[in-house]
Amino acid sequence: MSDYLVRALAFEGSVRAFAARTTDTVGEGQRRHGTWPTASAALGRSMTAALMMGAMLKGEDKITVKIEGNGLVGPMIIDSNAKGEVRGYVTNPQIHFDLNEHGKLDVRRAVGTEGTLTIVKDLGMRDFFTGQVPIVSGEIAEDFTYYFAVSEQVPSSVGLGVLVNPDNTILAAGGFIIQLMPGTDDETITEIEKHLSKMEPVSKLIERGLTPEEILFEILGKENVRILDSAPVSFECNCSKERFGNAIITLGEKEIREMIEEDNGAEAHCHFCMEKYQYSVAELESFIDEINA
Ligand SMILES: [Zn+2]
Image (tube, rainbow, N blue to C red; front, side, top):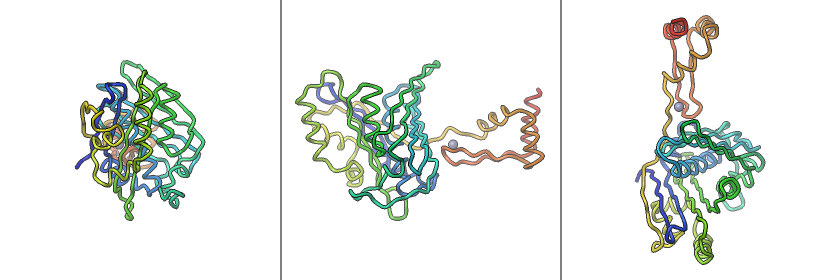
């Protein structure tokens, strides 16, 4: 089963819901960045949240999630969009701690409990929305819950989970976001809370093979859910040799001459996907020609 995300409504539209299986997507991030388990969980949870927030957008809209805590993983940056694409990196990928008192990866310790969660939505036509909240937990899901409550005034329940194999590859990853629309009645809220309190962690559900639809059925009750659509999600980076070439051109002739004389070429490397691009002296000279054209 490959990764996908579902959008749904429940309780006659008074609840909106998202759920995703992201095992392969987080696995690709782990492989590209060589993250160790605790860092994999921090990045994987954040990527899963970013994908579901991307599903709240339309068309060409994009979202950037920045988590800047005082823990050892350092800042994490994740980009996603309405097409189910995500890319991201953590500043220090080789971070791992012993499991916490609940027997889970100690994401809080890796991320830190002080700092900020920043969301930037690029809604096209130079229309940006920025929201920022302090980190309240460091476990990521609670931080997104707090963000939705404070910055978007939407009461939400967020679940995010990543399980790691002994060889550091990703065993299971996924998550959900449940949001209460204005006027959700108390009975509905009580019922959802009851289900959530009895439920296994979302990473366990994914490991057991539950689909995103089935995860929402667990939380909301099958009879209450109306699935709207489902779409594939994956790790994708839009970097290219040409894009980095354009960035080199903006450095100007003097800088490029130095690259030619001192380094006999240039190498660009993408933080998001770790791809490397080489530029020969001839290519760098053609950039100078372009500047002077
Ligand atoms: Zn890239």
